[in-house]
Image (cartoon, rainbow, N blue to C red; front, side, top):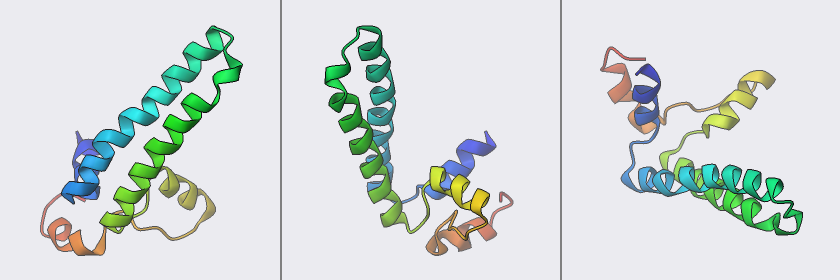
Length: 102
């Protein structure tokens, strides 16, 4: 439940939220489609799951640009590299600091 609360704090803009509502399923569908195609031996259709994956991530990236924070997957990479990142946008920090959740 803490994960969900943190996710909602990072996705407060309505447009960003809708971009994620579309982008996340596209990304998951890309993985499923790739598995099905590989099982069927359809290596020639590699571009379909690749296109879904790119489209899904682009939508989510745009959402995070709107929010003003870093994508979750990039946060993991930035932490690993010791680089700075923005978990929750500055414009929403008041809401976070005013609550008991961090």
